[in-house]
Amino acid sequence: MAHSIKDLIVVLVLGLAIFHFARPIARHFTSDEDFARRRGMWLALTVVAFLSPTFWWFVVIAAPLLVWARRRDSNPIALYLLLLHVIPPLSVPIPVIGIHELFDLNNYRLLSFCILIPVALQLRRAKGGTRVAGLRGMDALLLAFGLLQVALYIPPDMPNHEILPDSLTNIFRRAVLFVVDVYALYFAVSRGCSNRDKLRDAMAAFCLGGAIMALVAVIESAWHWLLYADLQLRWTENATRLYLERAGRLRAEASAGHSLALGYLLAIAFGFWLYLRKAVSSRWSRLAVTLLLWLGLLSAYSRGPWLGAVAVYLTFMTVGSRSLARAFKAAAMVAVVFGAVSVTPFGDRIVSVLPFFGGSVDRGNVIYRERLFERSWELLRERPFFGDQLAQFKLEDLRQGEGIVDFVNGYAEVALSYGLVGLFCFVGFALLGLTRAYRTIRETASADPDLAWLGASLAACIAGTLLMLFDSSFVLGYEKMFYVLVGLAAAYVGMHAGRLRAARDVSGIAPPVLMQPPQRER
Image 1 (cartoon, helix red, strand yellow):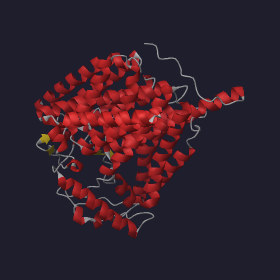
Image 2 (cartoon, rainbow, N blue to C red):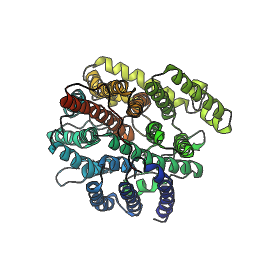
Image 3 (cartoon, helix red, strand yellow):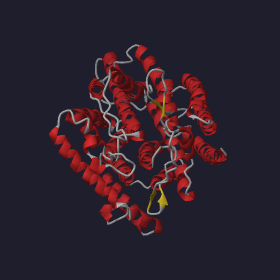
Image 4 (cartoon, rainbow, N blue to C red):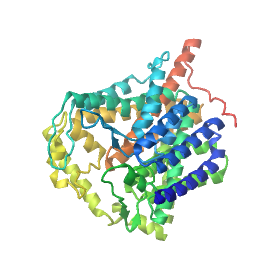
Protein backbone atom coordinates (compact mmCIF):
# COMPACT_ATOMS: atom_id res chain seq x y z
CA MET A 1 0.00 0.00 0.00
CA ALA A 2 2.91 2.37 0.68
CA HIS A 3 4.04 2.02 -2.92
CA SER A 4 0.48 2.78 -4.10
CA ILE A 5 0.44 5.97 -2.03
CA LYS A 6 3.63 7.12 -3.76
CA ASP A 7 2.11 6.33 -7.16
CA LEU A 8 -1.08 8.18 -6.20
CA ILE A 9 0.77 11.31 -5.09
CA VAL A 10 2.73 11.49 -8.34
CA VAL A 11 -0.36 10.89 -10.51
CA LEU A 12 -2.39 13.51 -8.60
CA VAL A 13 0.38 16.11 -8.91
CA LEU A 14 0.66 15.49 -12.65
CA GLY A 15 -3.10 15.51 -13.12
CA LEU A 16 -3.57 18.73 -11.13
CA ALA A 17 -0.81 20.39 -13.17
CA ILE A 18 -2.54 19.50 -16.44
CA PHE A 19 -5.96 20.64 -15.18
CA HIS A 20 -4.45 23.95 -14.03
CA PHE A 21 -2.75 24.78 -17.31
CA ALA A 22 -5.61 23.39 -19.41
CA ARG A 23 -8.29 25.56 -17.79
CA PRO A 24 -7.78 28.66 -20.01
CA ILE A 25 -7.79 26.44 -23.10
CA ALA A 26 -10.85 24.47 -22.00
CA ARG A 27 -12.91 27.66 -21.70
CA HIS A 28 -13.07 27.76 -25.50
CA PHE A 29 -14.98 24.46 -25.56
CA THR A 30 -16.38 23.63 -22.11
CA SER A 31 -18.41 25.48 -19.51
CA ASP A 32 -16.78 26.23 -16.16
CA GLU A 33 -19.34 24.08 -14.32
CA ASP A 34 -18.75 21.03 -16.51
CA PHE A 35 -14.97 21.43 -16.36
CA ALA A 36 -14.94 21.68 -12.56
CA ARG A 37 -17.24 18.68 -12.16
CA ARG A 38 -15.24 16.52 -14.57
CA ARG A 39 -11.99 17.53 -12.90
CA GLY A 40 -13.43 16.55 -9.53
CA MET A 41 -14.61 13.22 -10.94
CA TRP A 42 -11.19 12.41 -12.41
CA LEU A 43 -9.45 13.25 -9.14
CA ALA A 44 -11.99 11.37 -7.01
CA LEU A 45 -11.92 8.21 -9.13
CA THR A 46 -8.12 8.26 -9.19
CA VAL A 47 -7.93 8.49 -5.39
CA VAL A 48 -10.55 5.77 -4.93
CA ALA A 49 -8.75 3.46 -7.37
CA PHE A 50 -5.34 3.74 -5.76
CA LEU A 51 -6.75 3.30 -2.24
CA SER A 52 -9.17 0.44 -3.02
CA PRO A 53 -7.83 -3.00 -2.08
CA THR A 54 -9.99 -4.68 -4.75
CA PHE A 55 -11.73 -3.67 -7.94
CA TRP A 56 -15.13 -4.22 -6.30
CA TRP A 57 -14.46 -1.54 -3.69
CA PHE A 58 -13.74 0.82 -6.57
CA VAL A 59 -17.01 -0.15 -8.31
CA VAL A 60 -19.11 0.37 -5.17
CA ILE A 61 -17.84 3.94 -4.79
CA ALA A 62 -17.36 4.87 -8.45
CA ALA A 63 -20.74 3.74 -9.82
CA PRO A 64 -22.94 6.20 -7.86
CA LEU A 65 -20.45 9.00 -8.54
CA LEU A 66 -20.61 8.32 -12.28
CA VAL A 67 -24.41 8.27 -12.25
CA TRP A 68 -24.47 11.55 -10.35
CA ALA A 69 -22.00 13.22 -12.71
CA ARG A 70 -23.80 11.96 -15.82
CA ARG A 71 -27.12 13.43 -14.69
CA ARG A 72 -25.59 16.87 -14.18
CA ASP A 73 -23.29 17.04 -17.18
CA SER A 74 -24.49 18.98 -20.20
CA ASN A 75 -22.60 16.58 -22.49
CA PRO A 76 -22.20 13.08 -20.97
CA ILE A 77 -20.19 11.87 -23.99
CA ALA A 78 -17.44 14.34 -23.09
CA LEU A 79 -17.53 13.08 -19.49
CA TYR A 80 -17.19 9.52 -20.81
CA LEU A 81 -14.20 10.36 -23.01
CA LEU A 82 -12.34 12.12 -20.20
CA LEU A 83 -12.85 9.17 -17.84
CA LEU A 84 -12.31 6.46 -20.46
CA HIS A 85 -8.77 5.85 -19.16
CA VAL A 86 -8.90 7.33 -15.69
CA ILE A 87 -7.65 3.87 -14.67
CA PRO A 88 -6.27 1.02 -16.80
CA PRO A 89 -8.87 -1.36 -18.32
CA LEU A 90 -8.20 -4.21 -15.88
CA SER A 91 -10.80 -6.97 -16.22
CA VAL A 92 -12.23 -8.82 -13.21
CA PRO A 93 -14.77 -11.66 -13.64
CA ILE A 94 -18.24 -11.24 -12.16
CA PRO A 95 -18.99 -14.44 -10.16
CA VAL A 96 -22.51 -15.85 -10.35
CA ILE A 97 -24.00 -18.81 -8.49
CA GLY A 98 -24.64 -21.73 -10.82
CA ILE A 99 -22.18 -20.76 -13.56
CA HIS A 100 -18.45 -20.11 -13.59
CA GLU A 101 -18.82 -16.37 -14.23
CA LEU A 102 -21.22 -13.92 -15.82
CA PHE A 103 -18.66 -11.84 -17.75
CA ASP A 104 -15.63 -9.67 -17.05
CA LEU A 105 -16.09 -6.16 -15.72
CA ASN A 106 -13.63 -3.32 -16.30
CA ASN A 107 -13.64 0.46 -16.43
CA TYR A 108 -14.94 0.44 -20.02
CA ARG A 109 -18.03 -1.56 -19.08
CA LEU A 110 -18.55 0.34 -15.84
CA LEU A 111 -18.69 3.58 -17.85
CA SER A 112 -21.04 1.92 -20.32
CA PHE A 113 -23.49 0.87 -17.61
CA CYS A 114 -23.34 4.19 -15.74
CA ILE A 115 -23.12 6.66 -18.67
CA LEU A 116 -23.56 5.24 -22.17
CA ILE A 117 -26.54 2.94 -21.75
CA PRO A 118 -28.65 5.51 -19.81
CA VAL A 119 -27.78 8.15 -22.43
CA ALA A 120 -28.66 5.77 -25.27
CA LEU A 121 -32.00 4.89 -23.65
CA GLN A 122 -32.79 8.55 -23.11
CA LEU A 123 -31.97 9.36 -26.74
CA ARG A 124 -34.05 6.44 -27.97
CA ARG A 125 -37.08 7.66 -26.02
CA ALA A 126 -36.65 11.16 -27.43
CA LYS A 127 -38.74 12.11 -30.45
CA GLY A 128 -36.80 11.18 -33.55
CA GLY A 129 -33.81 10.14 -31.47
CA THR A 130 -33.17 7.00 -33.52
CA ARG A 131 -33.81 8.54 -36.94
CA VAL A 132 -30.78 10.63 -37.78
CA ALA A 133 -30.26 11.67 -41.37
CA GLY A 134 -27.68 9.67 -43.28
CA LEU A 135 -26.91 6.98 -40.68
CA ARG A 136 -28.99 4.00 -41.80
CA GLY A 137 -26.23 2.39 -43.84
CA MET A 138 -23.70 2.69 -41.03
CA ASP A 139 -26.14 1.32 -38.49
CA ALA A 140 -26.91 -1.65 -40.76
CA LEU A 141 -23.24 -2.55 -41.26
CA LEU A 142 -22.51 -2.35 -37.54
CA LEU A 143 -25.53 -4.49 -36.64
CA ALA A 144 -24.53 -7.03 -39.30
CA PHE A 145 -21.06 -7.22 -37.80
CA GLY A 146 -22.61 -7.66 -34.36
CA LEU A 147 -24.84 -10.46 -35.66
CA LEU A 148 -21.76 -12.30 -36.88
CA GLN A 149 -20.12 -11.91 -33.46
CA VAL A 150 -23.18 -13.41 -31.79
CA ALA A 151 -23.70 -16.23 -34.28
CA LEU A 152 -20.09 -17.38 -34.69
CA TYR A 153 -18.50 -18.94 -31.63
CA ILE A 154 -14.75 -18.48 -31.04
CA PRO A 155 -13.62 -20.84 -28.24
CA PRO A 156 -11.37 -19.32 -25.59
CA ASP A 157 -7.68 -20.09 -25.94
CA MET A 158 -7.27 -22.44 -22.98
CA PRO A 159 -3.77 -23.31 -21.66
CA ASN A 160 -4.40 -27.03 -22.26
CA HIS A 161 -5.85 -26.31 -25.75
CA GLU A 162 -9.22 -27.70 -24.71
CA ILE A 163 -12.04 -26.56 -27.01
CA LEU A 164 -15.03 -25.64 -24.84
CA PRO A 165 -18.46 -26.16 -26.46
CA ASP A 166 -20.88 -23.32 -27.14
CA SER A 167 -24.18 -22.91 -25.31
CA LEU A 168 -27.31 -20.79 -25.23
CA THR A 169 -25.84 -18.97 -22.24
CA ASN A 170 -22.77 -18.05 -24.28
CA ILE A 171 -24.91 -16.85 -27.19
CA PHE A 172 -26.95 -14.63 -24.89
CA ARG A 173 -23.75 -13.37 -23.23
CA ARG A 174 -22.23 -12.40 -26.61
CA ALA A 175 -25.41 -10.54 -27.58
CA VAL A 176 -25.49 -8.59 -24.32
CA LEU A 177 -21.80 -7.72 -24.51
CA PHE A 178 -22.13 -6.49 -28.09
CA VAL A 179 -24.78 -4.04 -26.91
CA VAL A 180 -22.78 -3.03 -23.83
CA ASP A 181 -19.36 -2.77 -25.50
CA VAL A 182 -20.18 -1.64 -29.02
CA TYR A 183 -23.68 -0.59 -29.95
CA ALA A 184 -24.44 1.52 -26.88
CA LEU A 185 -21.14 3.33 -27.44
CA TYR A 186 -21.74 4.03 -31.13
CA PHE A 187 -25.42 4.90 -30.64
CA ALA A 188 -24.82 7.31 -27.74
CA VAL A 189 -21.94 9.09 -29.50
CA SER A 190 -23.59 9.32 -32.93
CA ARG A 191 -26.88 10.64 -31.52
CA GLY A 192 -25.64 12.41 -28.38
CA CYS A 193 -23.18 14.82 -30.03
CA SER A 194 -25.99 16.57 -31.88
CA ASN A 195 -24.38 19.96 -32.51
CA ARG A 196 -21.02 21.60 -33.05
CA ASP A 197 -20.52 22.66 -29.44
CA LYS A 198 -21.00 19.10 -28.18
CA LEU A 199 -18.64 17.71 -30.80
CA ARG A 200 -15.94 20.21 -29.87
CA ASP A 201 -16.51 19.60 -26.15
CA ALA A 202 -16.17 15.83 -26.60
CA MET A 203 -12.96 16.20 -28.60
CA ALA A 204 -11.53 18.62 -26.04
CA ALA A 205 -12.36 16.26 -23.16
CA PHE A 206 -10.53 13.42 -24.88
CA CYS A 207 -7.54 15.71 -25.52
CA LEU A 208 -7.51 16.65 -21.84
CA GLY A 209 -7.37 13.01 -20.82
CA GLY A 210 -4.69 12.44 -23.45
CA ALA A 211 -2.60 15.29 -22.08
CA ILE A 212 -2.68 13.73 -18.60
CA MET A 213 -1.62 10.35 -19.98
CA ALA A 214 1.14 12.00 -22.04
CA LEU A 215 2.65 13.71 -18.98
CA VAL A 216 2.40 10.49 -16.97
CA ALA A 217 4.11 8.64 -19.84
CA VAL A 218 6.98 11.13 -19.92
CA ILE A 219 7.56 10.67 -16.17
CA GLU A 220 7.28 6.87 -16.45
CA SER A 221 9.90 6.81 -19.20
CA ALA A 222 12.25 9.23 -17.43
CA TRP A 223 11.99 7.52 -14.03
CA HIS A 224 11.59 3.94 -15.32
CA TRP A 225 8.49 3.63 -13.13
CA LEU A 226 5.05 2.40 -14.25
CA LEU A 227 2.72 4.42 -12.04
CA TYR A 228 -0.37 2.23 -12.54
CA ALA A 229 1.33 -1.18 -12.28
CA ASP A 230 0.37 -1.75 -8.63
CA LEU A 231 -3.33 -1.59 -9.51
CA GLN A 232 -2.90 -4.64 -11.69
CA LEU A 233 -1.02 -6.46 -8.94
CA ARG A 234 -3.73 -5.76 -6.36
CA TRP A 235 -6.84 -6.21 -8.49
CA THR A 236 -6.13 -9.15 -10.78
CA GLU A 237 -5.12 -12.73 -10.07
CA ASN A 238 -1.73 -14.09 -11.13
CA ALA A 239 -0.62 -10.62 -12.21
CA THR A 240 3.02 -9.69 -12.68
CA ARG A 241 4.65 -6.29 -12.80
CA LEU A 242 5.71 -6.40 -16.46
CA TYR A 243 8.03 -3.67 -17.73
CA LEU A 244 8.33 -3.64 -21.52
CA GLU A 245 11.52 -2.16 -22.89
CA ARG A 246 12.82 -1.24 -26.33
CA ALA A 247 16.42 -0.26 -27.04
CA GLY A 248 17.04 -0.15 -23.29
CA ARG A 249 14.22 2.33 -22.65
CA LEU A 250 11.00 1.68 -20.75
CA ARG A 251 7.92 1.71 -22.95
CA ALA A 252 5.49 3.87 -20.98
CA GLU A 253 1.83 2.88 -20.85
CA ALA A 254 0.26 5.27 -18.28
CA SER A 255 -3.39 4.21 -17.77
CA ALA A 256 -3.88 2.88 -21.31
CA GLY A 257 -3.15 -0.75 -20.43
CA HIS A 258 -0.33 -1.18 -22.97
CA SER A 259 2.27 0.98 -24.68
CA LEU A 260 0.74 0.34 -28.13
CA ALA A 261 -2.67 1.47 -26.89
CA LEU A 262 -1.11 4.56 -25.27
CA GLY A 263 0.61 5.52 -28.51
CA TYR A 264 -2.62 5.11 -30.46
CA LEU A 265 -4.68 7.17 -28.01
CA LEU A 266 -2.15 10.01 -28.09
CA ALA A 267 -2.07 9.92 -31.90
CA ILE A 268 -5.86 10.42 -31.91
CA ALA A 269 -5.61 13.16 -29.28
CA PHE A 270 -3.07 14.87 -31.53
CA GLY A 271 -5.52 14.58 -34.44
CA PHE A 272 -8.24 16.25 -32.37
CA TRP A 273 -5.82 18.95 -31.23
CA LEU A 274 -4.99 19.85 -34.85
CA TYR A 275 -8.53 21.21 -35.09
CA LEU A 276 -9.02 22.47 -31.53
CA ARG A 277 -5.82 24.55 -31.53
CA LYS A 278 -7.35 26.86 -34.15
CA ALA A 279 -9.62 28.27 -31.43
CA VAL A 280 -6.69 28.95 -29.06
CA SER A 281 -5.12 32.39 -29.49
CA SER A 282 -1.98 31.73 -27.44
CA ARG A 283 0.84 30.47 -29.65
CA TRP A 284 2.67 29.08 -26.62
CA SER A 285 -0.37 27.08 -25.54
CA ARG A 286 -0.74 25.59 -29.01
CA LEU A 287 2.94 24.65 -29.09
CA ALA A 288 3.00 23.31 -25.52
CA VAL A 289 0.08 20.91 -26.04
CA THR A 290 1.49 19.68 -29.34
CA LEU A 291 4.91 19.10 -27.77
CA LEU A 292 3.42 17.32 -24.75
CA LEU A 293 1.38 14.91 -26.88
CA TRP A 294 4.40 14.08 -29.02
CA LEU A 295 6.65 13.56 -25.99
CA GLY A 296 4.05 11.12 -24.68
CA LEU A 297 3.98 9.40 -28.07
CA LEU A 298 7.75 9.03 -28.08
CA SER A 299 7.70 7.73 -24.49
CA ALA A 300 5.37 4.89 -25.55
CA TYR A 301 8.08 3.74 -28.00
CA SER A 302 5.49 2.29 -30.38
CA ARG A 303 6.38 2.48 -34.06
CA GLY A 304 2.88 2.07 -35.46
CA PRO A 305 1.37 5.04 -33.57
CA TRP A 306 4.34 7.24 -34.56
CA LEU A 307 3.63 6.61 -38.23
CA GLY A 308 -0.10 6.84 -37.55
CA ALA A 309 0.25 10.29 -35.97
CA VAL A 310 2.23 11.52 -38.99
CA ALA A 311 -0.44 10.08 -41.30
CA VAL A 312 -3.15 11.84 -39.25
CA TYR A 313 -1.35 15.17 -39.66
CA LEU A 314 -0.80 14.78 -43.40
CA THR A 315 -4.39 13.64 -43.96
CA PHE A 316 -5.74 16.53 -41.89
CA MET A 317 -3.78 19.09 -43.89
CA THR A 318 -4.66 17.50 -47.23
CA VAL A 319 -8.38 17.05 -46.60
CA GLY A 320 -8.91 20.28 -44.68
CA SER A 321 -7.07 22.66 -46.98
CA ARG A 322 -8.09 21.08 -50.30
CA SER A 323 -4.81 22.49 -51.58
CA LEU A 324 -1.96 20.40 -52.96
CA ALA A 325 0.47 23.22 -52.22
CA ARG A 326 -0.49 23.20 -48.55
CA ALA A 327 -0.30 19.40 -48.44
CA PHE A 328 3.23 19.46 -49.90
CA LYS A 329 4.16 22.14 -47.38
CA ALA A 330 2.91 19.90 -44.55
CA ALA A 331 4.91 16.96 -45.91
CA ALA A 332 8.02 19.13 -46.16
CA MET A 333 7.53 20.26 -42.56
CA VAL A 334 7.35 16.62 -41.41
CA ALA A 335 10.57 15.88 -43.30
CA VAL A 336 12.34 18.90 -41.78
CA VAL A 337 11.26 18.02 -38.23
CA PHE A 338 12.28 14.40 -38.67
CA GLY A 339 15.63 15.45 -40.10
CA ALA A 340 16.26 17.82 -37.19
CA VAL A 341 15.35 15.20 -34.60
CA SER A 342 17.37 12.46 -36.31
CA VAL A 343 20.67 14.30 -35.78
CA THR A 344 20.11 14.46 -32.01
CA PRO A 345 21.01 11.63 -29.58
CA PHE A 346 17.29 11.03 -29.05
CA GLY A 347 16.85 10.78 -32.81
CA ASP A 348 19.28 7.86 -32.95
CA ARG A 349 16.99 5.87 -30.66
CA ILE A 350 14.01 6.66 -32.89
CA VAL A 351 15.72 5.72 -36.14
CA SER A 352 17.08 2.50 -34.60
CA VAL A 353 13.56 1.07 -34.20
CA LEU A 354 12.27 2.02 -37.68
CA PRO A 355 13.04 -0.91 -40.01
CA PHE A 356 12.46 1.07 -43.23
CA PHE A 357 15.25 3.43 -42.13
CA GLY A 358 17.60 0.52 -41.48
CA GLY A 359 16.78 0.11 -37.79
CA SER A 360 17.39 -3.33 -36.34
CA VAL A 361 15.96 -3.02 -32.81
CA ASP A 362 13.14 -5.55 -32.22
CA ARG A 363 13.42 -6.80 -35.78
CA GLY A 364 11.84 -10.02 -34.54
CA ASN A 365 8.51 -8.21 -34.05
CA VAL A 366 8.50 -7.18 -37.72
CA ILE A 367 9.28 -10.73 -38.82
CA TYR A 368 6.48 -12.05 -36.57
CA ARG A 369 3.98 -9.68 -38.18
CA GLU A 370 5.04 -10.77 -41.65
CA ARG A 371 4.68 -14.41 -40.68
CA LEU A 372 1.27 -13.75 -39.09
CA PHE A 373 0.01 -12.19 -42.31
CA GLU A 374 1.22 -15.14 -44.40
CA ARG A 375 -0.31 -17.79 -42.12
CA SER A 376 -3.56 -15.84 -41.77
CA TRP A 377 -3.89 -15.61 -45.54
CA GLU A 378 -3.35 -19.39 -45.83
CA LEU A 379 -6.16 -20.12 -43.38
CA LEU A 380 -8.48 -17.50 -44.84
CA ARG A 381 -8.24 -19.03 -48.32
CA GLU A 382 -9.53 -22.30 -46.88
CA ARG A 383 -12.63 -20.69 -45.32
CA PRO A 384 -13.01 -17.25 -46.92
CA PHE A 385 -16.62 -16.24 -46.30
CA PHE A 386 -17.16 -16.71 -42.55
CA GLY A 387 -13.63 -17.41 -41.38
CA ASP A 388 -12.24 -20.14 -39.19
CA GLN A 389 -13.23 -19.80 -35.53
CA LEU A 390 -10.58 -22.39 -34.59
CA ALA A 391 -7.78 -20.47 -36.30
CA GLN A 392 -5.88 -19.79 -33.09
CA PHE A 393 -5.52 -23.55 -32.54
CA LYS A 394 -4.00 -23.90 -36.03
CA LEU A 395 -1.34 -21.25 -35.47
CA GLU A 396 0.77 -23.07 -32.90
CA ASP A 397 3.91 -22.04 -34.78
CA LEU A 398 3.09 -18.42 -33.88
CA ARG A 399 2.43 -19.00 -30.19
CA GLN A 400 4.70 -16.68 -28.17
CA GLY A 401 6.42 -17.00 -24.82
CA GLU A 402 3.34 -15.66 -23.04
CA GLY A 403 1.46 -18.71 -24.34
CA ILE A 404 -0.77 -16.76 -26.76
CA VAL A 405 -1.06 -16.17 -30.49
CA ASP A 406 -0.65 -12.40 -30.68
CA PHE A 407 -2.89 -11.06 -33.46
CA VAL A 408 -0.94 -7.85 -34.03
CA ASN A 409 -3.01 -7.11 -37.14
CA GLY A 410 -6.59 -6.04 -36.56
CA TYR A 411 -7.69 -6.98 -40.07
CA ALA A 412 -6.22 -10.49 -39.86
CA GLU A 413 -7.95 -10.94 -36.51
CA VAL A 414 -11.35 -9.90 -37.88
CA ALA A 415 -10.96 -11.84 -41.15
CA LEU A 416 -9.95 -15.09 -39.45
CA SER A 417 -12.74 -14.80 -36.89
CA TYR A 418 -15.60 -13.69 -39.16
CA GLY A 419 -14.35 -14.11 -42.74
CA LEU A 420 -14.47 -11.70 -45.61
CA VAL A 421 -18.13 -11.03 -44.83
CA GLY A 422 -17.20 -9.81 -41.37
CA LEU A 423 -14.23 -7.85 -42.72
CA PHE A 424 -16.52 -6.15 -45.24
CA CYS A 425 -18.94 -5.08 -42.49
CA PHE A 426 -16.10 -3.97 -40.21
CA VAL A 427 -14.15 -1.93 -42.77
CA GLY A 428 -17.26 -0.77 -44.64
CA PHE A 429 -18.69 0.68 -41.43
CA ALA A 430 -15.63 2.90 -40.99
CA LEU A 431 -15.20 3.74 -44.68
CA LEU A 432 -18.84 4.77 -45.01
CA GLY A 433 -18.44 7.19 -42.11
CA LEU A 434 -15.18 8.45 -43.61
CA THR A 435 -16.56 9.05 -47.09
CA ARG A 436 -19.70 10.77 -45.83
CA ALA A 437 -17.63 12.98 -43.56
CA TYR A 438 -15.42 13.89 -46.54
CA ARG A 439 -18.48 14.78 -48.60
CA THR A 440 -19.69 17.06 -45.81
CA ILE A 441 -16.24 18.69 -45.67
CA ARG A 442 -16.44 19.52 -49.36
CA GLU A 443 -19.96 20.92 -49.00
CA THR A 444 -19.03 23.26 -46.13
CA ALA A 445 -15.45 24.24 -46.97
CA SER A 446 -16.21 27.57 -48.66
CA ALA A 447 -18.62 29.36 -46.32
CA ASP A 448 -18.03 27.47 -43.05
CA PRO A 449 -14.30 26.63 -42.81
CA ASP A 450 -14.52 25.82 -39.09
CA LEU A 451 -17.03 23.03 -39.73
CA ALA A 452 -14.89 21.72 -42.57
CA TRP A 453 -11.76 21.64 -40.40
CA LEU A 454 -13.71 19.83 -37.67
CA GLY A 455 -14.66 17.18 -40.22
CA ALA A 456 -11.08 17.02 -41.47
CA SER A 457 -9.91 16.18 -37.94
CA LEU A 458 -12.41 13.33 -37.63
CA ALA A 459 -11.64 12.03 -41.13
CA ALA A 460 -7.90 12.13 -40.47
CA CYS A 461 -8.29 10.23 -37.18
CA ILE A 462 -10.41 7.53 -38.85
CA ALA A 463 -7.91 7.18 -41.69
CA GLY A 464 -5.05 7.01 -39.18
CA THR A 465 -6.90 4.36 -37.18
CA LEU A 466 -7.43 2.23 -40.28
CA LEU A 467 -3.69 2.48 -40.94
CA MET A 468 -2.64 1.70 -37.37
CA LEU A 469 -4.85 -1.40 -37.21
CA PHE A 470 -2.41 -3.07 -39.60
CA ASP A 471 0.05 -3.10 -36.70
CA SER A 472 -2.08 -3.84 -33.64
CA SER A 473 -4.80 -6.09 -32.27
CA PHE A 474 -8.33 -4.75 -32.12
CA VAL A 475 -8.35 -4.40 -28.33
CA LEU A 476 -8.18 -1.80 -25.52
CA GLY A 477 -8.19 1.80 -26.75
CA TYR A 478 -8.08 0.76 -30.40
CA GLU A 479 -11.49 -0.91 -30.13
CA LYS A 480 -13.18 1.84 -28.10
CA MET A 481 -11.90 4.78 -30.13
CA PHE A 482 -12.68 3.02 -33.42
CA TYR A 483 -16.37 3.13 -32.56
CA VAL A 484 -16.10 6.57 -30.94
CA LEU A 485 -14.50 8.06 -34.06
CA VAL A 486 -17.04 6.58 -36.46
CA GLY A 487 -19.78 7.68 -34.06
CA LEU A 488 -18.43 11.25 -34.02
CA ALA A 489 -18.22 11.20 -37.83
CA ALA A 490 -21.82 9.98 -37.96
CA ALA A 491 -22.87 12.78 -35.60
CA TYR A 492 -21.01 15.29 -37.79
CA VAL A 493 -22.72 14.04 -40.96
CA GLY A 494 -26.12 13.76 -39.29
CA MET A 495 -25.87 17.26 -37.82
CA HIS A 496 -25.14 18.79 -41.22
CA ALA A 497 -27.74 16.74 -43.08
CA GLY A 498 -30.41 17.40 -40.44
CA ARG A 499 -29.90 21.16 -40.50
CA LEU A 500 -29.98 21.22 -44.28
CA ARG A 501 -33.24 19.30 -44.26
CA ALA A 502 -34.70 21.61 -41.61
CA ALA A 503 -33.72 24.64 -43.67
CA ARG A 504 -35.28 23.05 -46.76
CA ASP A 505 -38.53 22.40 -44.90
CA VAL A 506 -38.72 26.06 -43.86
CA SER A 507 -37.73 27.76 -47.12
CA GLY A 508 -38.49 25.09 -49.68
CA ILE A 509 -34.94 25.53 -51.05
CA ALA A 510 -31.88 23.76 -49.72
CA PRO A 511 -29.14 26.25 -48.81
CA PRO A 512 -25.72 25.48 -50.28
CA VAL A 513 -23.92 25.71 -46.92
CA LEU A 514 -24.50 26.37 -43.26
CA MET A 515 -23.48 29.65 -41.71
CA GLN A 516 -20.98 29.46 -38.89
CA PRO A 517 -22.65 29.79 -35.47
CA PRO A 518 -21.43 32.32 -32.92
CA GLN A 519 -18.54 31.26 -30.68
CA ARG A 520 -19.15 30.09 -27.14
CA GLU A 521 -19.06 32.89 -24.58
CA ARG A 522 -15.78 32.96 -22.69
